[in-house]
Length: 115
Ligand code: 2BA
Figure 1 (cartoon, rainbow, N blue to C red):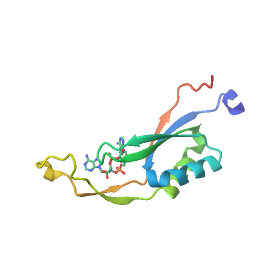
Figure 2 (figure 1 turned 135 degrees about the vertical axis):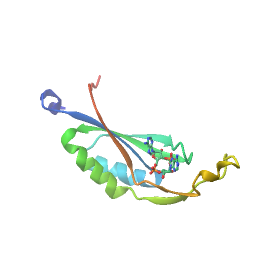
Figure 3 (figure 1 turned 90 degrees about the horizontal axis):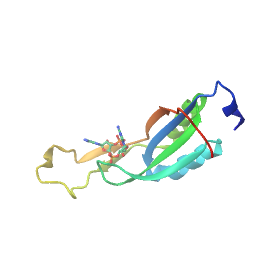
């Protein structure tokens, strides 16, 4: 972690929500290029089905590379929304939605420590 000693180092936390079906390939593509990745099992609030959230802490210059790897690995899919748990009055909700590829947030990191 020598780069952390340089004052010019700006760290970003990339938070990416991806389809479970793309998560293994995305994780291996990221780690193959040396990125440090944490995989969380998450659930989408709308479909209520499992998805995967990656936490990727990296230098600002690598931000675009991470996003391009994710965009290569993560596909969009049309998914039927389950009627389960819906009230009969929920006609306004779509029957089909397009999910993904990845939903990505890039956050600034104020402090990073490995203790
Ligand atoms: P879900 O919340 O299960 O949403 C799955 C898909 O359903 C969404 O795909 C979108 O096409 C549709 N959808 C979501 N909420 C909707 C609503 N209120 N009305 C109509 N359609 C709706 P994506 O946008 O690709 O999102 C995939 C997953 O990424 C989401 O799963 C959620 O877990 C996460 N996500 C997306 N945008 C987010 C955001 N702004 N903040 C937090 N999580 C987000």
